Length: 259
Image 1 (cartoon, rainbow, N blue to C red):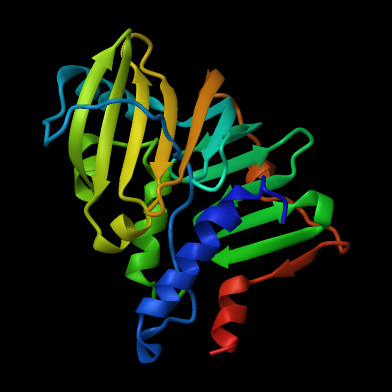
Image 2 (cartoon, rainbow, N blue to C red):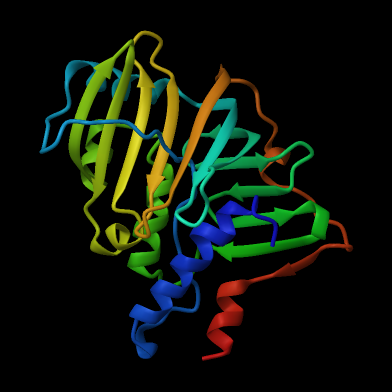
């Protein structure tokens, strides 16, 4: 698979495998649920120890309630322990409240990730292949849900929402940029991603960057630019029509069938 297929290769497949390994067979649900990605982050030196949200963080969190839609360009940087140089690529992201996302990596896109309330769809246009991850069902695996909830970290709706999922490790402000370091409260989420970091503008209250640190020491960061607040977004952006040339699979269902 192309190294640019970061969502599936670095996050979805490892999470799915970890969840299925940890859940006893008799308790595995037919569909594993979760949230989607919107967060990736910035490497920086932050204060050690616990910290309460400061006024700049509180102001930024309060401003998030005004965001109904959002779009931006991004530069994604992957720092892997097995590579001496980081891997970089560019793309575009769209967000619609409360939790619809569309990420396109590359131009033309090599990977498209779409999240709605019902499913997550990862599309590989060059391969005419798509992977569907249903997010509905009678039951949902809590650890899968907790780990994929990290991907919404860049778009909190309130301070209470942040504190319900994370422990605030530290906050700092430098050159009009606030840096927030979070630790997932869920033990399952911490096994996958020990830390999540968010960079935000204290002067314009924009999301500057998101970064995830994975358990193996690798990191994935997105830096955002050319942001547009509350643009008009068509529903079709989050409901792509795939032609008959596409092969659509459900990896979680296939994995369950092999058990």
